[in-house]
Image (cartoon, rainbow, N blue to C red):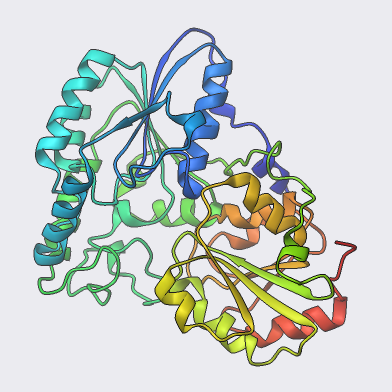
Length: 392
């Protein structure tokens, strides 16, 4: 677990020798893992005396303290139309034409020295317009943090679950056509792959950043291998994610329970929701599974021995829940460098995670461990063997 403590330190790129205008681009602002990564960076850039804006497109909600950075591309209708276009034609990233055109006009006026891309998928920005503009402004420094694999595939953001390696040569006949970003009818993966390759290559002043060695190795096997890739572990705000007392256990009558926690911004098959359901069948009354980030529909379908909580937009509330739990279980079947693992450990809660993607690289706590992917039964064995119960 060498050098894993870098993941909780200040990001090296926020140190600047002169005043800069910085523009961060991401699907969301101040919420979710990538949204919080961007606002953390913005605050650090600002402390160095720089001017910072975060351009985002998904979810109109931005926490009050981050609204000074926020500039939205388009509106809810634009997002819905982009999603509809994707469903019908499988051309995700090529919608939002007018919204992106208007945004680029604003960028001309803002005149940034540094543009830092994060998630540019999510039904909010037109990548053809964006990268055509970037190639016309090669004097601007560009950084691009890849949070998943979408940039070098013809459709998907992850391919581990599907065991597909077409992205190494040329995507076609996509086995995950109906997975995010879902297409109901057409398979446009070959054309998407060729277009992305054309758009994303040929930039002169760009640095790619990945939050894990795992993803960096994949990038080197892709058409993005012409660029240098730096591994910079994601940071979290340790002033928020720290052992935090609360009445969480009392509020939910869990004072004498061993809490197994799971957190996700979107719960789906690849996030391991079914694994939690199966695990719940094996637990006795001494244990309680708590899941955060569920929809109302999902909550209604879960067994009664799982405490289901809807998504919280408050990092402070999340820190309280992490701190009140005995162990954090992350059964994701695909992931890059999950910040939820970092957040839990920073709150004093050990992590059990599947050994997939860059998950192993997130472990900084000696009590945390990786297990074989899909082996949720191993969790109970570990709980009994090591007795993860704390004085919480």
